[in-house]
Each structure stands twice: as C-alpha cells, then as structure tokens.
Amino acid sequence: MPLLDEVEALRKEAEKAILAAAAREDLESARVEFLGRSGKLKDLMGRIREVPPELKKAAGQRLNAVKSGLESLFADRKRALSAGESAARPQPDPTLPGRTQPLGTIHPLTQALERFAGVFERLGFTVRQGPEIEDAFHNFDALNMPDDHPVRDQADTFVLEDDAILRSQTSTVQIRVMEEHVKRYGGGAEMPPIRIVAPGRTYRPDAVDATHHYSFSQIEGLAVDRGVTMADLKGFLGMFARETFGPEVKTRFRPSFFPFTEPSAEMDVSCVFCGGKGCRVCKRQGWVELGGCGMVDPNVFDAVGIDSELFTGFAFGFGIERVAMFMLGVDDIRRFTENDLRFLRQF
Image: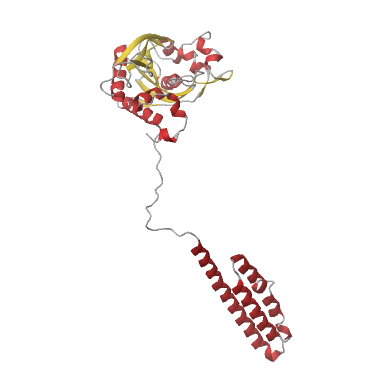
C-alpha cells in the first residue's frame, strides 16, 4: 500500500479512537497509540525515505497536516471530557450563606492567670518563670525544708531520679530570682527591691476530687524590701481578692505553718457560689481556701545570700484552677483538663 494511503487510513483510525474515548484515561491511551513517541504516526514518518524523491515533499506535508489535525482533535476532546466531569460534580450554590471558620478562645486557666498577674503588674510586680524539673536545693533546701521534712518523702513528691523531681510549688522560681538578684546586685544595703509573680505547672501526688488534682497550675508572689510587714501582705492580697472576685468578697487570714514563711497564714475568701451561706463547693463552711502566705523566713534569705537583718519580705501562693473556679463559676476542677469543647466554648 502506498505511504499516502496508509497515512489516510491511520488518520481515520485515530480520529475514530479519539472521538470514541469516554474518559480521560481512554483518550490518553489513544494519544499514546497514535501520537506518542513510539506511536503509529511516528512509524509512518520514519518511512518517508521510501517515497520517490519527487513525492517526498508532498508526503511530508501530508504527514504534518495529519499530525496537526489529530493533535487539535485530541485537545478538543480533552476539553470536552473535562467540561463533562465538571458538570457532573455538584456545583456551589451562590445563594447559600457563607461558612465561617470558628475562632478559638483563650483557655479559662489562661484567663485566670492573666487576670491574676494583671492585678499585681499594676502594683509593680513582674512575671517570671522557671523550670518544671527541679533539684532538691531549689525545691526543698533553700525553702527551709530539712532532709527529714515529710514533703521530701517520695510518697509526697514525684521523684524522677536522685536529684531531679517535678516541682511541687513555684516557690522554686522565687529562689532562682533571688539568687540572680544577689549575683547581680549583692545581698546587702545596695540591693534594690524584688517584686515578682511566678506562674506555672506544679505536681503533687494528691487524690483527685472536685477541688484537688495531681497536676495543677500555681502562681506565687514575692516582695522583698526594707520594712515590708504582714500588713503590706494583707493589703496586697485583699486588693487582689476584690479586683478578681468583686468588691463584695470577704477575706480572712488563719494562722498556719509553712517552712519558708514566718509568720504564716492561710487566706480564705467568702464562697462566690453561695455568698458565704454554705454549699457543696465550700463544704458548707461559707469560706474557701485560696492559698498560703506569710513573711519570708530569714533562713530562706540566708540560703540565697540576702541580709535578713536589712530586708524583709512576703510571699504567697495560689492555685490558678481554684481562682478560675471562683471567677468563672466552675464547681469541679477536673473540667479544666477534660478537654470537653462544650465546656471550653463557654469561655
């Protein structure tokens, strides 16, 4: 069969295959068969040397015309198949209202922390943080807790190894800040005042109930200067309570004992759930313990190198979860760690 006759037969066969392709996969197979690098049209182009010289020009022009026509037909068919697939897919309805991405909210514990720290920042305190894995010196020794103190027992502290524990209070940050302060200014008469609050996670092997958890957030405060008294402490904390829980809240200080403060006290606030009448949260007492406080024990100053004859100071520590419970009206501490979005979206 003459070459030009074969070209014409191939053109008809290729056009039929391209037009019959019902899917893009079938169309691609037809392209490879007829227009590919090893396709049938390529084979015919390689045979042009068999054509007599006087017919080679016409044969070449015909082959190029067939190739261009098939490529154009292939492109048209590809567009048609794509348009059909698009029409088959569900089309967006421009009359429907738009879908907005829901925005996240600040976790209620973070809200409580920021509100708490904000009160003391207005009073000249700065926020400081420290490591959650501590050594015995910062967690016990410098806080006036001797080796035989009960809290140093492994049953009362999460011990990782011999001199590595999960901190049981953020008082460790107070020690580190005082060490840095003494290293920079010295602990004598030239030392400037210290006013800090230290937030962070703490860990104690407590039984979990409505008001206790083995892992909880705590924020502690420290003020060191000349002439600081218990009256200053009560004034600061009374202002904090009113700023945080409202002007009607009442406070009381009960004598207590902490190794790192002397004298020491427990601070209570009137229950915001029952107004002091007594309920399940306050255990029918009308008061809820907020945290401990007191004047810094001179032994703590001696441990970090501050002259306890020149300086006095007060310290306090509150659980952030407990503050958040009062602020937001939550009656169970476990709700903060359950990651229930129905609860968290309320705040």
